[in-house]
Length: 217
Image (cartoon, rainbow, N blue to C red; front, side, top):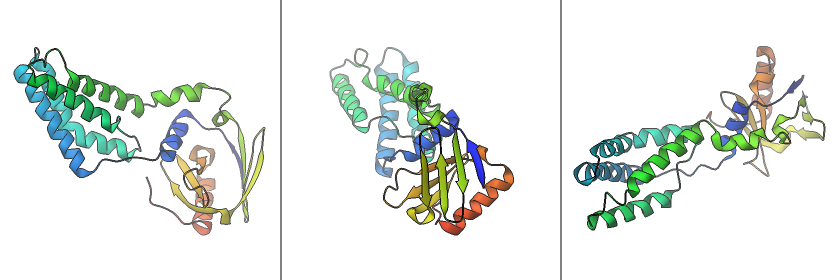
């Protein structure tokens, strides 16, 4: 079977997320953060200059766990863990001095976290790399699937890989990802849009026959 493909930005974004080592929160940290955010919102309502910001923070605290879990299912990490605790400490310190209206650290973190989530969800941080036209993701790739393995070819290289060098594969909404034994965090990606329905099924059968599968993500 022979075919040609180029990656779209959506496929590039999904491949980048699959390749990212996700650092997840524990259940204790999830609930601790959520409770502290809601508590901070209540303090803003009581002592802050504008109670509406307090309700805004409470809303984020209530939705915090489902939002983070949704993003983690898409392999998207939340903002730096230590940053939250630093700003929370500064907010508590300023609140004890009666300066909450002058030092809105928790509010700053909440807005920054939302902006970060939205940017990550839509791939804003990866867009700059994608725009770079020298990026290999823009190159036209020829793929040949044989009994012995896979052969990739583009304008620069020609690579042949035998099936036994692959350890496992996974299938996502838009991609097939095949992992190596010696470098399991850097898979080969194949966009599904490159295959017609019959080719996709044939390729999937090849993978099931030659390589173990890992759970769908």
